[in-house]
Image (tube, one colour):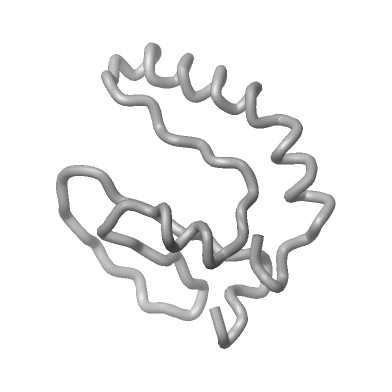
Length: 88
């Protein structure tokens, strides 16, 4: 969670993690993919940075759109409504 995260949403995600994992597994089957996305429960922003595989991409409402091509593991951080705080 971030400074601007809504605590109720983070708590709801924690309780629905098993459902989200089942949905991800079904999506993998439907798309005939071999790898299921990793779904982590709410953690602090600092902890998320420490466990996220590189490269790390940050979706920002204020950034210019760009196309990035890569292969292998990666992390995508999507901030809360209002964006990440300045320290983050």
